[in-house]
Amino acid sequence: MPLPSITLKILQHRGKDCIGLYFDYNKELIAHTKKLPDILWSASNKCWYLPDQDKVLDLVYEHFKGIVKLINQTGYSLGSKGQKERLLKQLLEQEITRYKSYLRGRRYSKSTIDTYTSFVSSFLHFTKKKIGDLITADIDTYCEQQLAVKKSAISTQRQFIGAMKQFKALNQELDFKINESLRPKPSKFLPVILSQEEVIDILRNTKNLKHRATLAMIYACGLRISEVINLRISDIDFNRKLVKIYQGKGRKDRYVVLAESILPLLENYFTTYQPKQYFIEGQKNGKYSPESIRNFLRKSCELAGIKKRVTPHTLRHSYATHLLEGGIDLRYIQELLGHNDPKTTMIYTHVSRKSLNQIQSPLDMAFKEITKRDKQNKKLPIAPSD
Picture 1 (cartoon, one colour):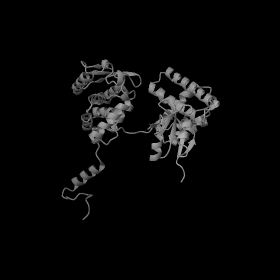
Picture 2: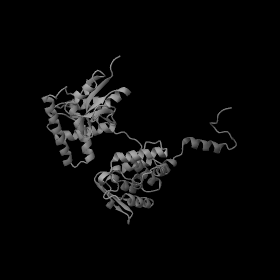
Picture 3: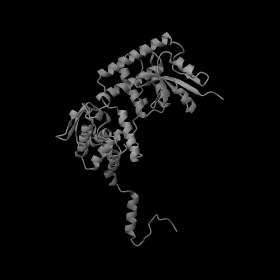
Picture 4: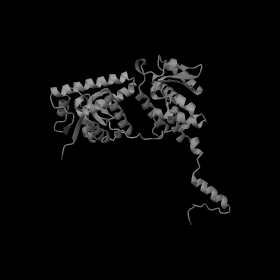
């Protein structure tokens, strides 16, 4: 019986180089893999991974010796990494650092800088070429062998091309072009919308007071997850019933209305937790993590019996839709959400129950018309035959 195989590849995880272990599901193999020191699971890359350190390949080969067939696609050899390999890696790291500084100079947001830097780092390590040796075909190959094979989302490929455009702008002397055909049109998805009853069910099933206050604030004010994490206590004006969102997406300030019904909850929360600086705080009074919010929202949805795929942004979408259904003009909703383009806000007209309920199905119209013509006929036109 042939041995199971593990493919070793270089990957980027949270801005750091790692060595990924890719293999088909195997209970015994997973148990053995977990015995490796410092081994972790990456949900985004769907693999186990180790930090890319000297001698790590030796450790992996020794651990799996005689158990699996290892397919080494890292470009590294066993033992100390060759001088040529180490020098190339150092040069690539210098280029990545220079690229990150360039993006900072262009005043990109931290999240965009991290995303773009991760893509460029992944691309450079994939090609294993010096910067001056890159050609247009390298970008095509990366899209074909990395993004397409992994079935990455359309938005991921668009971000990669955006990252490479900025990389080319930094290195204008390079003789390669960005093929626009590799930047597919974005997919258009309608947002998931919760009913007002479902929102209340989620809040009722959020037992932790801090968690409930967080979710209530996101929905009541239509906040992005980054906005509630960065919200300072000083930004909440209880007298005017307003919340100032400082430098939201697109580096825009805006005000949103603070709901009257949330005030008792907030008073209880502030009295109990006494946050010092931010509306919600993690350890040592620092910022709360986005993943923590996603996790407790997921648990609340399970307790509420909600089967929809709900994220913190779903609460924001629901906020906008419920405003529209309540008769609030789209122009005001655009301001409250902080949208630059009114077309972005228009998407809620496609999911608004009020708008959709005004549309009559042609089947209903046919029923009414035929019933009107023949009031004596009690039999429905599409009733089952005898």
